[in-house]
Picture 1 (tube, one colour):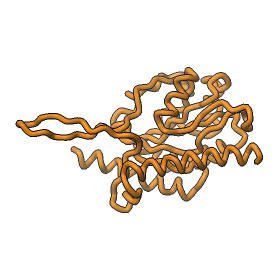
Picture 2 (tube, rainbow, N blue to C red):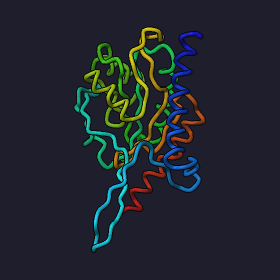
Picture 3 (cartoon, rainbow, N blue to C red):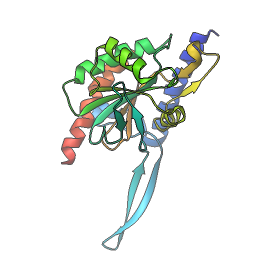
Picture 4 (tube, rainbow, N blue to C red):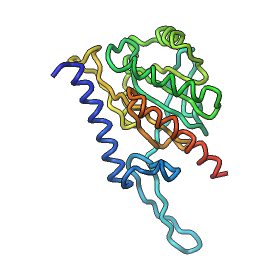
Length: 226
């Protein structure tokens, strides 16, 4: 098997594993047709007493607090995305395989929502030793994107890899992979409570079309909760 095919296989397995997890927790993922999206990851029932009656609440998997630096040397934390819907992925600027395709597709998401202040994009570099602020700035300039909408993030390597696990994404150093890293090619859709609500193949136009259509479902959820 070639290195390129090995990376593609790993990415396919990651997406398949996530889809299987969603089915195990929440049944078949046909919720888009029902104007709602599933919540991915583990969940925990918690009992509490209300007016003498036992009520069971569900605690869902949530993305933990984080702190990274973007292409303009601005600190990006959970407060940056507070109350917003955001799309995230993992990449590295010298990636010779899937990353260029991913960024072409993420640009489509950017263009679709660049005027909506309630939608943000976060892209985490998994090669922070190379992807400094200056490198990310040059990369963003070549993409032609604004920092306020699309944050290209760098920071402590271990923290970035821990965040990948929180997003249920694959990301690791891999001497056998082209470029020295292997990672998921997925985009992850996160709601206003930092819960994972969708994953999409970031190299496939059709799947990114689905992401673009799904974002308003989460924006409308926020309106419905008011």
